[in-house]
Length: 552
Image (cartoon, rainbow, N blue to C red; front, side):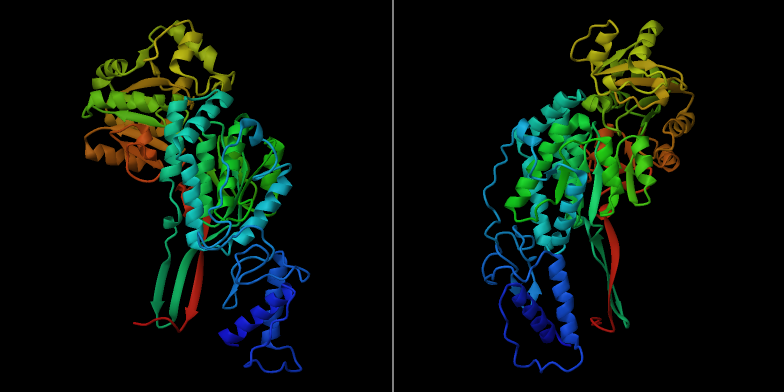
C-alpha cells in the first residue's frame, strides 16, 4: 500500500467520524472479497480515533476551519484529536484559540477552587492528565516550545514573582521572600527546554537510524515545602518540554501557593492552545493522595524532591523513579584560598533563603593555619560567633529533636530569629550563626536547613578533604572548596563525587546564580541522574529506516 492509499483510508475514516461520506479516489480499486490492507488500515485508524474521543455520531466539521468541532485533516494526516475543545498541535497563531486573552488574576481563595487543573480526587487528576498527554503526542515541537515559553513568561513577571515568593514565606514560615524571588526567577529563566532533546543519527549501508528522546507519559511529581513553587516551575518546564503531562502532589503546608502556580500554568497553556490538564493536582494535598498517585497504573514515572523517606518510598514502587534527596554540603577552605572572599562567599551561600536550599553550605572545614582569620572575616560579613557553650546548649534544645534531627518549626528561620529565641538580640545585618565544634556534633552531622554554620578545624587540606567526604555522607549532592591549589581541588572533586562541586564561589553559583550553566531544583543524587533536565524525563527510542536515506 502506498502513501496515497494510506491517505485515502485515513480520509474515509475521518469522514465517517464527522458524519459525512468521503468519495473514494479514482485510483482505489473495488474492495476484494478478502480483507484488504486498506481496510486494515481503516480499522486501525478508526480504533485510534475512537480511543482519542471520536464518535461516529459527532457533528460534521469543516476540515478547513480552525479546530473547534473536530479534526483538521491535511494530506490524510490527523492533526487534531476529534472532539477536542482546545487546539493541541497547531503552530502558534494558527488556531482561533491561540493567543486568546486569559485572566491570570487569581485570588488566594480562587486558587483552591476546583478547575484549571485542580481536581477533587487523585484518580480524576491522573485520568485527566493521561488524556491530555495522549493529545499532546500530536503536538509539534514548535508548540511545545511555545508552551514552555508561556510558562516562563508568567513567572518572570516581577509582580508575580514577588507574590508567589511572599506567599510561600507566609504559608510555610520558611525562608525569606527576596531570596525566593531569585530562585523562582532562576527556575523560570534557566531551566532547559526542548533544546535539551538532541537527536542522534547514524547512517551506513544498512540505512538510517535515529535515536530520539520520547515522553514517558504521565509523571507524578512530589514537591517539597522548602522550594514549592521553584520545583513546580522547574519540573513543569522540563517535563512538558520532554512531551509528558505531570501530576503534582505538593506539600500540604505550601498548598495555596502551589495550587496557584498550577492554575496559572493551566490558564496560560489554555490561551496557547495546549491540551487541557497537562499539569494537574488535587484540591487537598495529603499523604493519602500522594500514595494514590504513586500507585496509579497510568503514572509511568515518579519524581520526588524531599527527604530520605519519600525518596525511599518512590524507589520502592517498582516504577521508574527519580529521587532528589537530602544533602549535607561541606565547604573546605585551605591556606591557599583568598580568605576574605571565601568568608564572604560562605556567609552569603549559607544564609541564602535562610539555608533552605539543599545545596547551601552546611558545615565549614578549615585548615587550622587560616581558621582564626577565616572566622574573623566571616564575622565582618554577617556571621555571629557563638563561643559560650551554654548558648550552644540552648540552641541544641531549640533546633534539635530528641533523635538529633532538625525541629521543623526552626527550619528556614533566620539567624536573628534563632538567636532571639535563646536570649540574644542582634541587628538585621546578622545572617548566620557561626560555632566552632568537633566533627561528631549533631550540628555538623545533620542537615539542619537553617543558618547555623559549624566550623571544624583540620590539620591540613588532605585531612580537610577526607573529613568533607565523610560529612557529606555519600549523598553525592553538593560540595564546595576555596583553594588555588588545582591538584587539591581536583583531588576533592574526584573523592567526593557530588553532583554539584563549586570552586571559589558561594554554593548558589552551582544552580546558576552568578555561575554559568542551567539550573534545576531536582538534584537526583540517590537515583543517579544528578542534574535533571528535560532529557531526564524522557526515554531514548530508536527509529530505523532500513537500506534507505543513506546518501553518502
